Image (cartoon, rainbow, N blue to C red; front, side, top):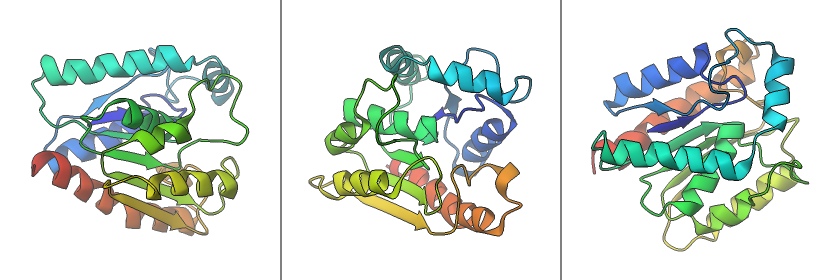
Length: 211
């Protein structure tokens, strides 16, 4: 699995996700580093937000595709999927539309906004329509960043794919970023993660390990 982090970069939470995926499914877990070093472990949120605004879609996708190629060639992995959170969820959708060989696409609270951010040059919803892999999307009903209109468009794109399974989760009282343990002090966030995470792991096993 290629992991695509949230704004935190490869911080403690994302390392925990990688460890859990590798341990509980037996797959190779490789994490893309959006900031090439900094993470929430050592960098203030304001600085990470500044870096986020400077991301270039084309450069990011080229970097992620190089990681996928490395996993398939150098690591010898036959069945590769992607899982992303927030900004990484959006890029998971983009990779899904560009790479027909992906085994799965999992997007947690993907940051696909209306209107798109100024530096979002790739239409993520159009890429959803082109995705042939099984997809799981988890959306929090009280997302303060991604509107219900955006969710409706993502869901419509998923459900109109031909022959490709879609698993759409809606957690009405959860908030954006509910998978981050630091937000589990609010019960709806913890409940949403506890319900969705075993299903994400099951999808990983079913599409990679058990192929």
